[in-house]
Length: 121
Image (cartoon, rainbow, N blue to C red; front, side, top):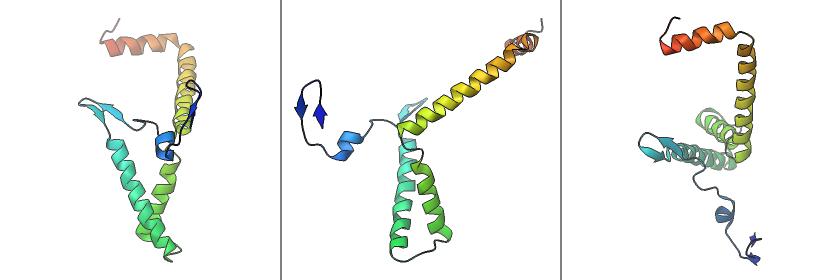
């Protein structure tokens, strides 16, 4: 890895160079939690076991092997910053469209705000 600021190069293990610290850490009422990472690790473990079974000749995959492979492959799509950025973009776009629709009906918006505030006038 080459550090442009320090103009220095050093060898790093890919896990150290490519890992994003606390990427799957979520904030809970009790503080930071790695529950998501533990769940993903479980899916990874089951996926690795299923892949070994396939390597040993268990193909086509059925039952638990098929389910573990499906979960493993599906969750690989969600593991990086690109997917997270894409979901943030979609949420922003959908929210913007919803606000534009609501802006065409100001009386309805006023009623909803009043209802949420517990007032009728």
